[in-house]
Image (tube, rainbow, N blue to C red; front, top):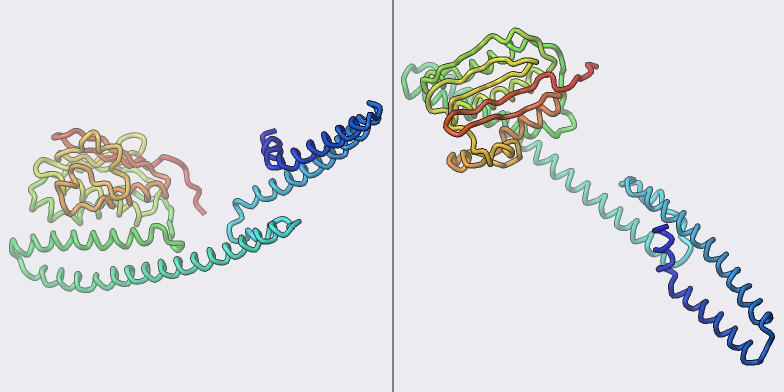
Length: 329
């Protein structure tokens, strides 16, 4: 019914002209004192013929309207589904539409090409930078001093940031693969903790590790990145105390620290891209990307990610490893 009223509004000039002509015809017959029946007959006949034409035209417009609505999701194949034009303006509109589609295809192709070039460049850079990092690490391992140990800790941070860049690039890549298998959770968590052993010792932070003793369906590489990122944040914002790793039922991996905590107004937004909050503003190096990547990865793996925190008392990040079932191919 709404479409019908829109159609009447669209044809209002034609309808007004028809009504005016019918009135003019009636007045002409009345002027010459013709019988009432002779006046009504042609007026009613014009009304019936006009109404029939109007209804037929409405159905034609409605059919074309429905055809155009179905084209909204066609994308690049839009011009292939356009209805047949019935007049010069419709032909002109279709030519404009086809020209627009061609221009859009060209723009999309240029954007994709530039995006792929950028991805290739940064991927190559990230892999190349690993070579000097490995060389520096090898040189530092041959020297046993406080400065060398601190440099190794800083170098581990650099490696983590490089890995973050690669993860960011791979996340939306069409070639990204997720190898879902059952893994012992301890075999994933322990190597991640071992990477930060030097920082635990240097910062004199206590590690409270409760054996997890459970199997989870996940991707080892991607889950390791999530755990390392959460541990890195816990170490970054914990000056004293401890970091605890334990399991809650059902299969919820918890990483709890005794750090500065997260402000209540920041807590709902910590997984947003680029959001750093109060802690991030204090730490000028914060990018607001780490937890965003963790959230994206957990979503792709079928896991959940949540946070609970209290200012001055610390934060606990929970990875819900049984959020939903994923079929293994």
